[in-house]
Length: 150
Image (cartoon, rainbow, N blue to C red; front, side, top):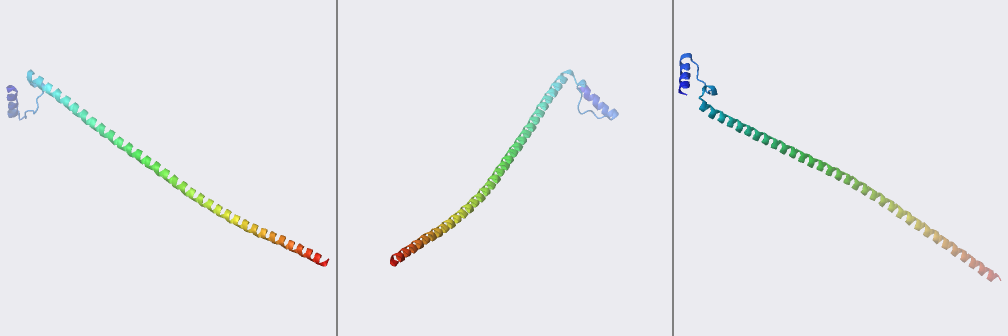
């Protein structure tokens, strides 16, 4: 390591080359290489786990957003269906109300017709009774006249 440091300082002084910030494993002594490589593989593994965690969080957020969207869509469709049912009930209520009014008019007209029929029947009956009464009176007069003339 001392030789490597001495060589880097010499290069800088004689040729003006700055020493490298990171040394490649080939220039390091073998015992130091294993530690560096093992540390490097551990860092790679930690990075991979970190990336997996980030991916899982992203997937979780996507699933939550999809779920919220589907819930919103489901609620919107339920609201639309309820509004449509309410509109249909309103229309059928209006139709029922109109039908009820129509039947009320028909009933009133039937009542008026029945009253007119009763009135004309009563007038007809009264006239019929009066005619019969007049006929009897006339017959009684004829009988009286016939009895008086005899």
